[in-house]
Length: 278
Ligand code: SF4
Image (cartoon, rainbow, N blue to C red; front, side, top):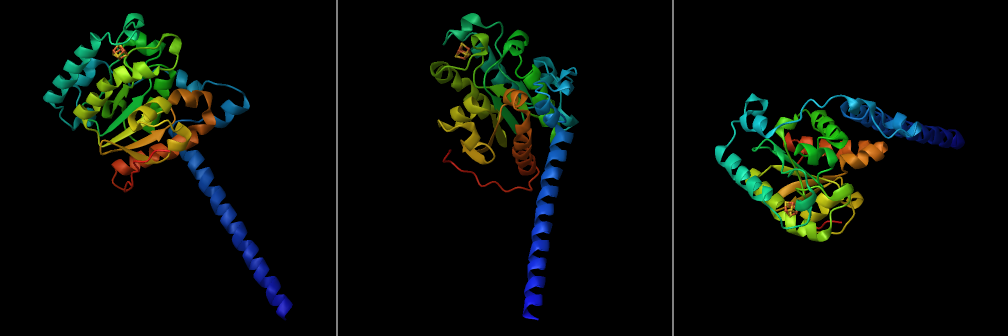
């Protein structure tokens, strides 16, 4: 009798294990489907076929803004723009346009100051302009920019709802990484932008944005996925869209990070920030 009861117990335990395993599998499939619906339908395919480019990203950009459009648009038709903020940003942009603090002023085609809603609750910070951005004078307009647009739309927002800027305002030649002295000389423009816009939440895209705003050398892989704090503003760290183009499997991680930003803005996720990066 005792043996029969032990056998039944073992069966019940293994059934529980199977249920737990199935539930965990279902949750990860659900997360993958959510992410793929949102902004990365080819994550599996791209890896299998060693294809670096998402074909969906070749579609024409729908939400590239011009300074004129952002100055006149009322995002979502709801939030009136603040004239004082617009003026302050315009003054700062003019100041940066004449900036010759570092050698990038000599090689840039255009200053890439920032774009978006001056009253944005969500502000993205990237690294530096690339070739397309340098030519057009706007941040995130190349393939990485198109992916950022999809990420923004995946959380139910539009590019016109957010503000987007980089740490550096001029393109490093050949898209090389920003140098420490260039970052040191340029960062004041970014910090003033943040101060004028006063977003509810920041999202640092990639190593340079995260390390600059958090004043740390910790790698993005250890910083991502949780809220930090910049001057009292909660700041999520996640991978840069350009990195995702090379590593499409990590789109799932960015989706997890960006959902936290969405839930924080919706008021359904209390933020426990950490001021100790790393
Ligand atoms: S990168 Fe920044 S500091 Fe260097 S010239 Fe451009 S605006 Fe000035």
